[in-house]
Amino acid sequence: SPSPAWPQALARGDFQRILDQAAQRGIDNVLSGATSADLAALADAARYRRKNDLAQRTLLAQRQRFPQTLAGRDAAFFLGTLDESRAGREARTSALEWYGRYLAESPGGSYAGQALGRRMVLFDSLHDRTAARETAASYLAKFPVGPYASKARHIVESER
Image 1 (cartoon, rainbow, N blue to C red):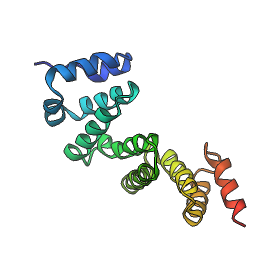
Image 2: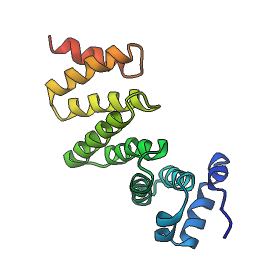
Image 3: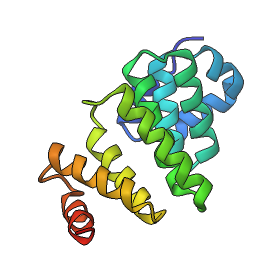
C-alpha cells in the first residue's frame, strides 16, 4: 500500500491518524518494514499520545534497523526520556545509560545539551555527587548559558 505520509501527518499534529494506520497495518509489520522517517513519525506520535510502550518499541526498532542514521542516534535520547518518565532507580539508571549512549554517538547532536543536563540532574537525584559534579562542570564548559546552567553552577558550588 502507498506510504501513509506519516511525517506530514505528524507535522499537522494528526497523531491519532498515524497510530490508527500503524495498528491497521500491524505494529510488528510496521516495526520491521517501515522507512526510517515513518518509524520516527510513529515514535513521536506515540510519545505525544503517551503510548510509551509503543514509543519504546518503535525507537528500539529505529535503532536496530537504522543505527547509523540521525534518527537512529536520536532514538537513544528519546529512549532516555521515556525511561526518565518512569518511576524508580532502575528507570533513572537506564535513562542515564541511554543519555550516555546518545552523547557518545552524537556529541554535537541536537539534543546534546539536554542529554548532558539531564544526566547531571539524574546523577544528582541518585546522590552520585562525584558524577553530578563532573557532569555539571562539563555542562558549564559546553553550555555556560544553557537551560541547566543554574543547576550546574549550584552543584559545582555546593561541592566546594
